[in-house]
Length: 251
Image 1: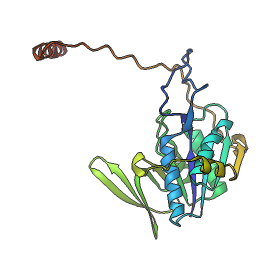
Image 2: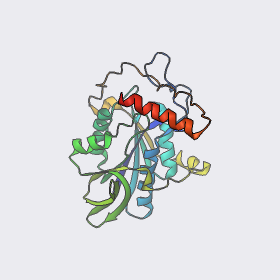
Image 3: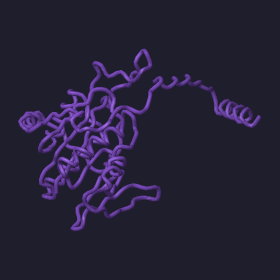
C-alpha cells in the first residue's frame, strides 16, 4: 500500500494570533510557523502503518510557499520516505487545495490519502471531503482509530452516542482526529537524516488547474475583549445580580 499524506503550514498553535493593522488578515511575518496539529496525527498514522508492514511508501505533500518545506522536513523526520512541495504563493482555498491534491493523486497513484480533519488557521474542515468528491473515492472523516483489514480499512470515529466503526474499501480518503494517535517527537538526528531524503518542488501552475481564490475577505477583526468581572461580597449579592439579569431578560 502506498500512502500520500497532505500537510499544511500554519501559525504555530502556541502563538497568540494577531490581526494585521489594515484588517486584511492574520499577521504571519516574523511569526513562528509549524505543521498543522491535525496533520501531525495524519503523518504519524501513515508512518505507523509503514512500520507495521502495511505500507511500502509514505509520500508527504504540502501546498504553499517555499517556506513550507520546513513542515515537509518535519514529516520526513517523522518517517515519511519523500516529500513534494507544490509551490503556490498567496492564499489557496480548500477547493483549490483539493483540486491540486487530486492531480497529485493522479501522478502518485496512492492507495490511501491521509489528511488532518481540519487546519487550525481557518477550521474549514473541507479539503478531505472535497478531494474525495473530486476523485469519487470513499472517505472516512474524523478518524480516531485506524486498522488495516484484508478488504480495506476499519476506521473508528467518535460520534454523539460514543464511537462508531466503519469498513472502508481502498483507495480511500481518511482525515485524522487528534485522538487517532500520539505523534512522535522529532529529535535532531532524525532531522539531519531527513535532509538526505528526496524533496521535490513543483510549481502549482504546472498541474493545469484553476486554484484562484473564490472568496473575498472584506475584513478580519479580533474578537471583542471580555469585560472585566465584578467581585461580589456575598452569596446574597450574587443572587440579587442573577435575579436582576433574569428579570431584565424576561422584560
